[in-house]
Length: 340
Ligand SMILES: CC(C)(COP(=O)(O)OP(=O)(O)OC[C@H]1O[C@@H](n2cnc3c(N)ncnc32)[C@H](O)[C@@H]1OP(=O)(O)O)[C@@H](O)C(=O)NCCC(=O)NCCS
Image 1 (cartoon, rainbow, N blue to C red):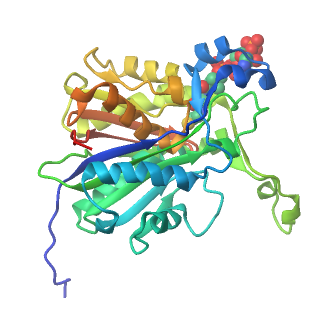
Image 2: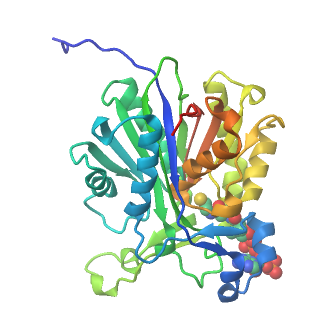
Image 3: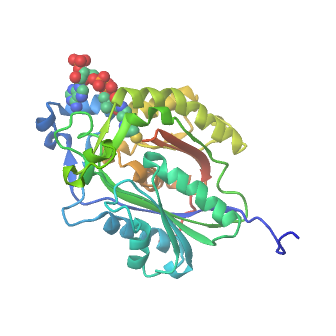
């Protein structure tokens, strides 16, 4: 006998976005001495001029809570109405319980379903894909997706390959039911044979067997910059074009491009390879935000809508890519303009 219930599908969309950037702004000049670099080199090679770094008493959850509260307010719903919370992060310092469960306690609905995603800089787009399916299949009515990172806790200020790139922040979106389809099919996958290209591990994980944990050191992020750069530049443009086509659009009919903010040269190269026309507005939040991994796309989305309010309700291609190596892209309808 088959299951005895009515199965139906509900369209979904992003209802709102919220962002939180720590107050402390750190210019390149504060970073360069320890890594024998220059402001000019960092600007030319990455596009980064300043970034936000959390205060010593400011936690990942503090930042996520602030972003989530803005998104909830803009969506016009309360936390009690949220039935699932998906938290994309690689910088919550505990294996369990999850960052999402700490967040829902703070937000005042400790009964919502809650879990974390570890998909690094693709985490937010993975979260959008999951939340879309949850709403579509009526597993949840409203889903809160957070991308949040406190990368300053996991970045070695003396590491020439990473110290100037990574930063802190949190972004959040509310995903819920809509009349039309507001989230296109997700194109995603991995290149896990290159999983060594970006790592964040304490030293003891490299040892097998009975290695004692007293050998552990606090994990820092490390990366092979050129490997990641080449992969992103060559492999992500076809992903973007597939996501645009899967949504029934063309580069000419797209309104905005909000890629993961890893390097401005990667952003420019992707836009060129996909032959995006000048009419497509490109998010370049990296200049003042740096690379905030899972937080980078919602932060860039919030900044883009603030500077270009005409983009509310228009289409945007999102692409996240990073440690794994993993990636995900989809076209979404940007959230509508609300009075909040
Ligand atoms: C990290 C990154 C900016 C480095 O740029 P790059 O052009 O690949 O730099 P390279 O490592 O090839 O080094 C080029 C030169 O700059 C020098 N250099 C490297 N790091 C430097 C630094 N922080 N400051 C100044 N000079 C530096 C190197 O010594 C080298 O000098 P040389 O030509 O005299 O030998 C770039 O590879 C990158 O952005 N990669 C992608 C990383 C990324 O996006 N990671 C997150 C993924 S989510």
